Amino acid sequence: MLLKGNWSYPTSIRFGAGRISEIADACVTAGIKRPLLVTDRGLAGMEITSRALALLDAGGLGSTLFADVDPNPNETNVADGLKAYRSGGHDGVVAFGGGSGLDLAKTLAFMSRQTRPLWDFEDIGDWWTRADPEGIDPIVAVPTTAGTGSEVGRASVITNSVTHEKKIIFHPKMLPSVVICDPEMTVGMPGFITAGTGMDAFAHCLEAFCSPHYHPMSQGIALEGMRLVKEYLPRAFKDGSDIEARAHMMSAAAMGATAFQKGLGAIHAISHPIGAVHHTHHGTTNAVVMQPVLRFNEIAIRERIGHAADYLGISDGYDGFYDFVGKLNGSLGIPKNLTELGVNEPDLEFLTNTALKDPSTGGNPVEMTYENTKKLIQACL
Image (cartoon, rainbow, N blue to C red; front, side):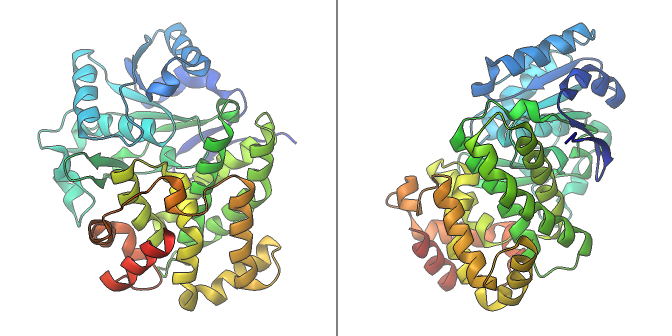
């Protein structure tokens, strides 16, 4: 089956195997003449990155790389990146990689010509209006994992290394101008990254589907995104060269990030502080806490999850869906709990209070309080 297309929901997406060859043209389309390719340290020396840089250079756009990006990017990475961006006279970024590289790159383009400090633009109320929209440079995004969907998002997650809190930086103009979704970029992903990022996509779709807010378009996208993960993540995990499975997972990742305009919930509210403090992989953490959160929300989502189970071909409604998540995690080698993931001697009070301050709490179908959130985190250990 040939999986290829040109999409514009919500941004211009060039989807299909081999379309990395269009990276220079994508920059021209976005109005970028001197891009800075931003990725993480792990990808910096890989062949796919060298190829992307060579294609940019062949297109007359140079081949400058910034890769000083931590797995959970922080304000120090932002400061270092801005120094490289400004000193190099760049006028846009190529956001290349998984969530960390994409988020850091988008933040550099956003902050490129701002005069206020980074934390002034946290996703609180209308703080985004503090930014000068003329001081935001264009972004071309090239995901190399299939999970976060940051390539189609208007925000970045940056860790405050002083307070150990993950902050969401938001502005509508952080949405990339052009996205290249080439599933060949994901073929070399290790199995544990395929699993963790794939479950991140599933978590986005699941929480969007369960959110009580009204957004029928996101609801439908979330449901189909879950189906794609159910059908194709096991295949991609089993055989990383299965390009059809890789393509569908790349679609599911973009769909999850599109769907969660409807809202996220307790999975992300817990995962964010856990990742910030204990440096766990975000998608894997989402997977670990997924069943406890399903149980936490059962009273509000039982009927809705039953409908999802019907669509996904899972018998026994909510109970069958709950069991399916556990079996899927097990088949992917996901740790059974946070302790097994490496979360030892957690500060429950800090984690609880930080989770309650996370914007994701607003989309959870059951109200999160100090008492029930602390019990939920304990249930994840």
